[in-house]
Image (tube, rainbow, N blue to C red; front, side, top):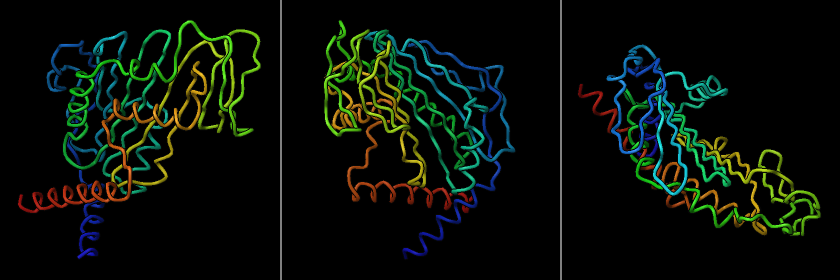
Amino acid sequence: MKNIFLSIIIFLHLFFLTTQLSCSTNCSIIQVKYSDSFIEPTNHNSCINTTSINICKGQIIAYYNGKNFPKYINYTFGTIGDTLERKNENDINTYGLVNFTKYQVIVNAKNEETIIVADIYCTIINECALFEIKKLFFKYNHQLNPFYELKSLIYVDPPPTKLHCFDISIDKSQQCSITTNYPVCLSYSKDLRQECSVEFDIHIHEEFIITSPEQVQFNLMNELVRCNKDNCNTIEILTKIQNISRSYAYGNIIRKNNSSQQQQENIHQIFYLFVFIVYLMN
């Protein structure tokens, strides 16, 4: 039974990668202010519907400032403009993915600003990017600025003149020896840096990539944190920052153990099987 189920899933992946989709494309940026309704791409004069492409694409950006719901939300369909857009499309074909979504949570503490960005690539059904952006539009439009949940972990004002930070090179916390400007604690995952530093901004940039089926190589997250609270760059605090950012970017989809991971995979498998059955019936 398990082998039959796996064969169906593989067939579905191959089927969707060769199926021509109907997707909204060529859109200029659609901007919606808070409290305004979602604008369908069919009601926007720059968008067209294309029925001969393999991957639907879209991007949504929510901008928060102060203790408010988002000031506005921008979204578009078609070309996203990410420098890695072509690579992401190639990865979908290479790994047989039906969904590839990159989420970014960017916080500027001094300005009390947060930007949430979602780049969506999907191959499963017509207008799948539109469906996902509608869902995220509703989510982002009904949540307050995530900065205020992150603030207690990363930011104090006025900034401290003395600060303790975790230093990965010695595997312990130490007081920063910086005597000019204000010290900050730094964590930068690309360079495996956790140390004292001097920066003007208190800043977070978290990046998450979610794929379906899940591929381990995409689970590596990019992260940059500059904070000015004692030991705010320890693994414990960074994990809290990551979890809060995830919840605001795409919900509490955090696989805590193998059981929950298997449950999530079973849900995906059932969905793919349902789509396949509907296709055969048509």
